[in-house]
Amino acid sequence: MRFSRDRRGQSVVVGAVILFGFLILAISLYQVQIVPQQNAQVEFEHFQEVRNDMVDLRAGILQAGSTDRRQYQTVRLGTTYPPRLFAINPPAPSGTIRTGDSYPITISNGTPEGTVTVPTRFVQYRPGYHEIEESSTWYDASVLYLDARGEGGEVAVLEDQDLVNDAGEVQIVAVQNEFRRSGTGQVTLELYPAENVTETIPAGDLTVTVPTRLSGSAYWDEADIPSGVYGGVTSDANDDGVHNLTLETTSDDLTVDTVGVQEAPEEATQEGDGVGGGGGGGGTTPTFESVEATVTSEQKSNGIEDIRFDWQLSESADIQLRILNDNGDPVGSKTVNSASMSGSTIVSVASGSNSGGKREPRPVTVEATIFSTGETCDETISSGDGDGPFAMCA
View 1 (tube, rainbow, N blue to C red):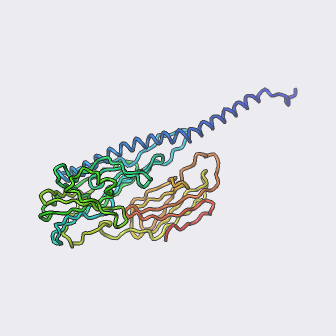
View 2 (cartoon, helix red, strand yellow):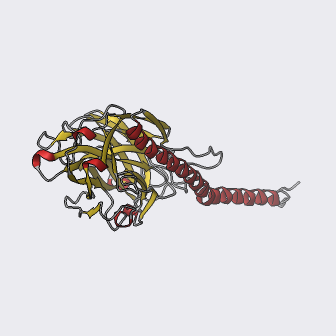
View 3 (cartoon, rainbow, N blue to C red):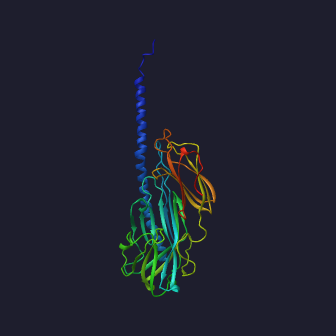
């Protein structure tokens, strides 16, 4: 019997190969098109949830100041993607909520001895989404808004100002204390009220300046504030994005309360007592002394390996380490809370959609940021450059 001419199994083999090819194509299309769409929907639902959390946080700050009762508000920092059997998810998107630098609210009747300063801070929530925009939500001088100016967008106001009521009375609630939390779970903010500081306010006609990230054209010129009270918004003189909102009022129409995040707030001080412009709220300021990035030996499918970061800090601080692709999109990140002065960690790079083989080496930007100061070190590298280390700052 001769078997060389027996072709009875060829159609079965060819059919199996074709079916297997269609299966691989279907999985690839699912990974490239369906997974990002579903993850974007998960992120959008979380965005709606955290927007409601921030509305409640704003209400809690104002209520703690006006009622002198401690408030507890919960914010969902991040979310998780649904588990997948035949597809790959990027890392779960985390979020960060923090108070910014301290800036002075100034209350003055025009004399040095009649000037009082009260420190206050902005509150920022920033998500770490992979599919939708990472615009921050800000609590700023009683206004809650989504700020997309860094992404080429505009300011979208979620809750209008509550500084001045219809009768022209000015009601200020200052937010104090340094605070920052990052992750994917929930965080509870304890809001501690202080005694009303109205008794320290000078008598007579007063000029009040309130720090704000919103210019007059961006919001305040159209805000519902009586013309006799609204005194305009100064330009960004320090080039730090912070303006001064001016309000004209009297001691009888002004109320000032303070709310501390996680601990009791500070007291108002007279002019010359040492409380002044912006800053970190006391103590030394953490800085990077050096940061280096080293490519690990195991090459991933997108041409870039895991990255090891080695850092030297002047003091312990919360830092974020990120890897960005050539489009500026994050492909790997890690937050190190209370990072020691000297440390090292690995940041994994999210695999690309073509997970079946290696690609040509692609450039990435490695970036390290100190949350409390915003100081950033970065460097563009490629796996084709060798293992490193690459000095990002020194």
